[in-house]
Length: 214
Image 1 (tube, rainbow, N blue to C red):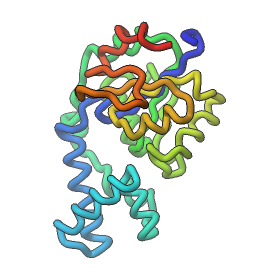
Image 2: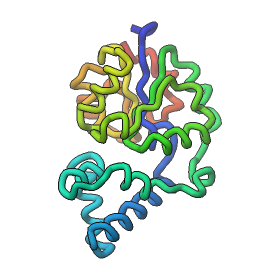
Image 3: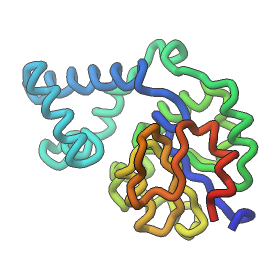
Image 4: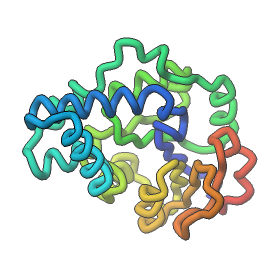
């Protein structure tokens, strides 16, 4: 397994901390978009954004389903980062940790492609990954929906059993596990759900956790 192992990494809150600056910025941008295009006040827009995120795994999925929102228009207007370089919290040790993992490495993100690529460049690890599979490549079927996972596997001619999914979202790992992947949960939770094979507090711990994977 080790020689043919393929690592599939989530981006936000897995490879870097998006909670501090990036997620609040995106949430404000999405709320403003809903206010403008659905004619809602701030409170109603916030509530709808969170409701769609909980129900579908991404606010965009709810907007497409219920309002016919154009996904490219939405992503363009909600992922504007004029000061992204100041918002990404770079971890200098990340590059070395990733280099210690044998096998092919992919990024699978619910974010738009340009944002994902820009973040990886700012973290100075973009050359370590063989592909960035973002929301556009999943045909706007974000995790935890299974369709994006299957598209990724087909694109790279992979079997799920070759893959290790590294994620901060247990819901996304449930889908990965059902498909046959091994799973690594990046979390400081005390207990792990059944879909988790290995739990680590930080992605930097992953090289030391190799022995716990099949």
